[in-house]
Amino acid sequence: MDREMEFRMERAGLIQEGDPVRLKEDTASTMAGLMYYYTIRDAVAMSNNTKKRLTNLEGTVKEIREEEGYWTVTVSIHEGESKTPMQACGASN
Image (cartoon, rainbow, N blue to C red; front, side, top):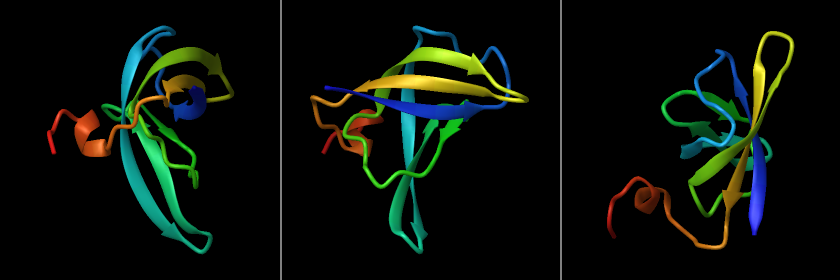
């Protein structure tokens, strides 16, 4: 099953549609509870906060839309196979 996630990119040309990307997971404690947010490596674009954690930290750029002063990057992430953040970075358990 694929999940789409949007990221905000503030510099043009860092990635292209169809590019494979790796994501970095971070957390934030908020009044609404623990939230996850993701960055396209290496500091290309950042997602909004989400309560639903990704199970895979790799995806493919599906679309890049130019907005006023920034770009919205849509990434398609296949969530059929579960990977921990450490496994996605190449570390073994």
